[in-house]
Length: 290
Length: 340
Image 1 (cartoon, each protein chain N blue to C red):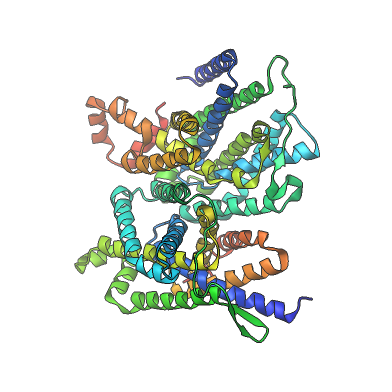
Image 2 (cartoon, each protein chain N blue to C red):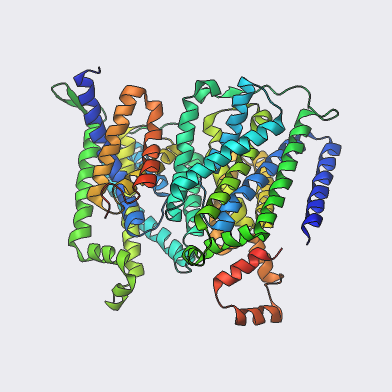
């Protein structure tokens, strides 16, 4: 019988991890869940964000999460550019399924190989004020390097949720998923709305990338482990619902954390994928699906 | 072209290639040729599902590695000749494709693609934790000194096996393309709902395609441990196999059996040259850039470019008279599927 302390610590670690997973998945929930663009290069953009934070951190000593905020506009622009190419080459021609997937797969590969050429395959870390130390609540430890990304991630999710539910733009994004033609009749350009939404989804990668490098050392090919996680969470969370995403992310985080604690970390990557396969087979609408 | 003539032609070309490779006496040529042939099989296998049916498999590396690790398993448990291993690998990888397809093919295509990515990581994790197969440390396969066929060195024997597999894959792909199965698959690719509504058994055809495609990929992987001598999960399940298996048919052209062949020979040779002259990381970057460039600029690949410039579907009154008769894109692509 495992001790209560161990269980409690695994539970908190999973919760904190889940908050971070939610930040990584938020972008996919927008691009795949709402816009129906299967951006499998999303995790590669997250790693790109990590390396942006790493570069600013080592060159100027900037706080990595602050660096993430600073590169947000650049990632927004990158997202807008990628969408424009995707739209012009595939979406407009109605060839988005097969070739669009190959396009994003190519982007993922280019980003990964580009980073290998630029930075090598060594693991990189950042210096942050909260890199070490923890807050102890009785037997439960809250490491700062997990807690800070968790809190900022929650703030980011809340901001995104407000953007989607309260602003005109957000409602337009939700509407474009349902009926682009109706938007056109209201004199709103659906392509522009989709471009902005996709750019926002890529911009979240800047933040998620910064969280990632605070939490663990990174190397270019690490993004692949996140492909399964983000899509598992996105599907489990009911495709496009941010609260659902958060709940699913926390669930996955806790399950992974317990697996790591009691069976060893080498099994953890398979959990997400196993969960994804089971979800797809049994309940493709997700736990919180409509 | 009649099928019997085609088979004879493929066999003759394969025999000629093998004779040339042996006559050259260059071991490097044999090693490089093996890799290119392996990609011909992988690309053709991917295309049966991806090109003909329109379902993107990102997990080619998983099926390939399952084939390779099947060989490792039997090498350690009970050594068998390579042709037998190839058959076993085909069964194992085919069943894997069937199971995978059964779980996800009822959903939209994107879910299948994501699930194949997932499959690669699940299997890699299983192999990493399976100590009998060498775990994450990898496994050494000591190649036998003598090939089972007298007069051939071992690498010549491996090239011969791969040549037979490549020829078999091409013949299988062409046969499928022209069969009722191929027509059904093309119908699924062009409009699955319409195909379903006119009575095409879509799920069954998709499962057949996934199984065949997976089995061929497993067969391509089975001789690999004997070729490479040392295998570890990180490289066996590596992204380069998956990317190449997609990039080669996309660059060559996905609706025709010759597309993956052209793509694999071009891209495979290019990579061999780039690995020797530049670096292996740069050659992977080239593959990625070519893939993205081709899907944007030439969506039907080299075969498509060729057809639009010189082919029957190309210019002149034929095109005019046809385009007046069939305005829809689906009629267009099902025709290009049938043209040899």
